[in-house]
Image 1: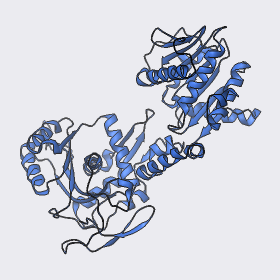
Image 2: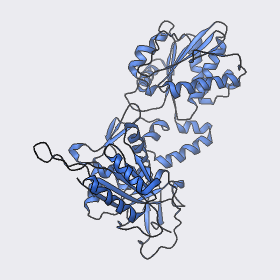
Image 3: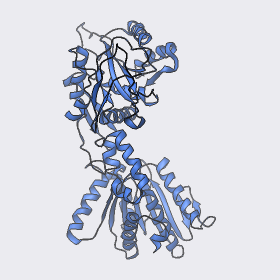
Image 4: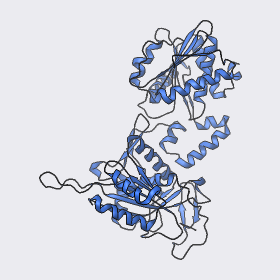
Length: 480
């Protein structure tokens, strides 16, 4: 009855009843709870905390909840519990202590950070121990600092999160729970993917389906956060099917077509160098430019841009003093609406000079672990959605190098949910791969014109069928 009064959805009530059964009968069970992103995991946690606070107002007791970071995750959890306390009439009654404790009478919820260097020793959990985003919490930190907090009280423990890979704390607890369930039949693992949540919330289902269309069903973030399916630790960045989806039928262009919009991306390579004894060193990456036409067809894509790569240019070992005029000449010819420039290291002064010439059309991009990961995910969303196409095979060095780098590109999915992608040195360079990926940033903040399939100029190609993963649509490229 109490769960119904708190307006939890049926799948949330299943978890809440199991947790409260273990708490009230001192069973000391450990649960794992996987709920699709934005499916109500945090609301479930806050309602359980609220109930335990009200039940322990007189006799006392402590809940300990840890999150991977104090800001913003722990702070958000505290705010959510305060909101629920206000909703149920406890405003002005509960109190905050020491900046990380919420108390109601003699009951307390202690919010702690699970960051590596956080000092959390000395706290005791006698009602409940909660591990939020368990897949992002270190197994060593949990075992050393948090699990002992409930050892003297045989505390009930709940691990909340979404799937990532087989190396996470959440996956370890999940597999242990599934094995225990086989032995005694007591349910300890609860899993509700986006389809399960959508049965109770149709609006949520509509949103996730739009995300599936945008990202692609095999996108790592869609698989893990919505479908709750694990990913492998590493391997090829692109499958054969993904590579095939990138093969376009439009011709390469040497100059822009009138009335069409283009974006560009530049991966800055190194200058030619010699070793101390005068011998040549390994050939540096080339400075590589990719130029793509941008469209949002009215009948496809739900407003997401389609990129048609129409030109690639590269310079290998060219001094930057000579490179900058060449880049300026190229961009004056193509007049891109947006230009992303690799501004990492020696690319920074190049990006600065280009920005001085082309103003706000230049967007510097600095490669870090996080920014490169975000770039990789955006690139995959374009590929999975069939929204990035290369010009037709023309026998050129640029096309061959692009396909070779795409085929050799590797992916590493790290425990902190960042994606690393690269071409191993033994397989060559990654300059064409990176300039192609940077196009995703060039198009991200740009809303292109809508292509409506009007009659084409005689200078354009004949109408052709563009095959997407879902449907073939007869339409011309780059229509006006």
